Amino acid sequence: MANRQVQASSRWVVLALSFFMMIGFALSLQALPPLFEQIMQEVSFSNSQAGILMGAYAIPGIFLPFVVAYLASRFDMKKLIIAALTIMMAGLIAFSTAGSFSLLVVYRLVAGIGATVLVVLAPLLITMFFDQKNIGIAMGIFNIAVPLGTVIAANLFGSLGQLLSWRMVLFGVAAFLGAILLLVIFALSLPQKDGGADARGLSKEPAPKFRGRQPEPLAACRDLGFS
Image 1: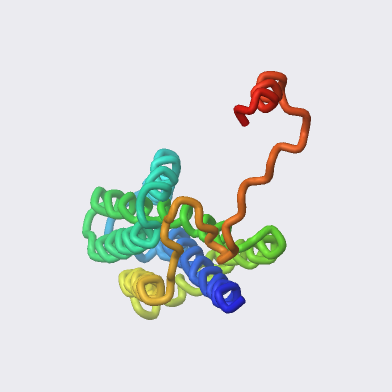
Image 2 (image 1 turned 30 degrees about the vertical axis):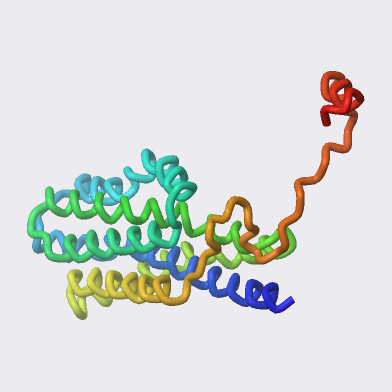
């Protein structure tokens, strides 16, 4: 009973962390449109090239999700999340210091790689820690994050850019991701892979037997004593 209570409380911590990860993703994705006018004053590029900057962030999302899912099944997911947040931070900081359009594209692509890893793993955490009874409300809360981050970026970043400069706004997003990184390091605890232990803290139970009519070869083997 005590173990179930610990797991029940920790899953809400996991939900909060996943929620903040997706807010960080949305802020990183949507940071540029309100700041394009200010960026263009320092780095020359056209409106069509601005679209390239937005597209560069999404390109890794076309090719990497299956690779990330494979890595998540083979390696420690917490380490992958830490690496993803670190890559996103590095891409944002480098982008905020770039002085040419080509470097902006490269650093935007780097940030997109980390974001793709995060987008794959964050919802996976929800499915690991919430059972069928509670996963609906958990996913409902989780899916608020991206619209909320988008609204924040669209309505605040333009004014903050004029007040502080666009580079400082991106530094601020990187700092927010850094805070999430620290929370993940110290607050996220994932179950060890022990060959089938349930992440929700429930006791191991044998898989339910097939209740329908067995195929004839299986039934024959059973009758002969091979089952």
